[in-house]
Length: 401
Image (cartoon, rainbow, N blue to C red; front, side, top):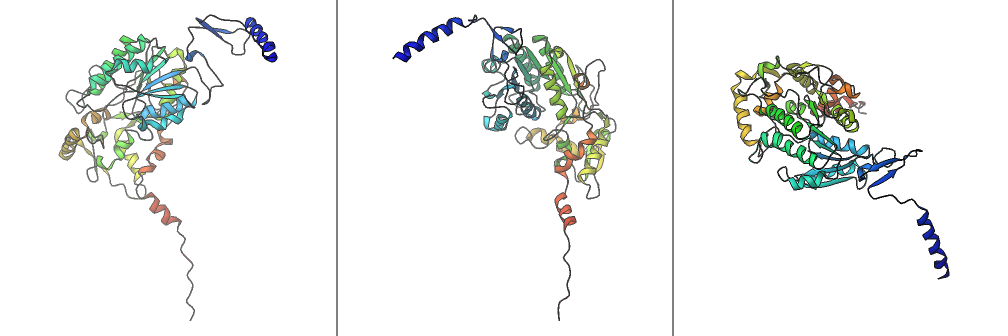
């Protein structure tokens, strides 16, 4: 009891000597002689650590579309630099469980949502200062049309982000978007490009400070470009149908690593607010040259007998594509769909007035340095041939008489 009596006055004196600040602001001292006053403090205002995975860099980011090709890689990169991630999902959370290890303990949070349920969206963004929309689709379903996903969905996310006072909204569109794209295969041109264009306008209308990203075709692990042409179902025997044999289409493929680096740079750089960026590769290729290049690597142990034919005069390709339109929503395998083919055969149009990856300080990776690595999983009979080459024949000994 005596020790308690002597301890209590010391505690009271210590509390009286401390500076008590109002609840309306706080002070964060970054080891400077002039502390920085933060008004209306939130978790996002309180940076901790040196900026690595086990730190908190002050960014609370909600990533819509985290289970997709871009989203899965982006979440890992953001978690690596100390970002707290909120990952909305429609699927079972076990389908995106790998993303949990992208950040430190407690820094990656899952939350179910529906694109038409505003309350569920608000719950995922009300504590964030950055929202990234990566939601997109290359085919329509009974529940969601291109208009629902690319226009109304994007409008809803931008509107609610503005209502929740989110500082940054980053929207993923695509290259070649126009109000009236030039038709190549489809008479009415691509619905994807039309709705992506409308989606950009809707986002700018609801969130004028939003940053728009327009990437070219993206290649990388589990992509929808190299995988599309390497799939056996894309071939008709030894023939590969391309519109005009792919001779009139030019593409500037960009690496997934460059796209992710560009998004992270945009998140961390406030000068990118309100701008539209084009993410393209450093070199331009004709589509038929790209496809031949891929098959030369895939069949390097054999003779490349793949023949590129004009899809206009290949009735089997027309029939095959039309049938896949009906079964793809139920059984998605090769995305040989009219909308996908239309987008693949539109040449990339670069607007010289818009900034690119170089303006973010990123030098795009040359496809020539990566393509063999990307095609390696598809090389036919690779292991069998290499194993045979490594076999050392035994030394033959004469049988003693």
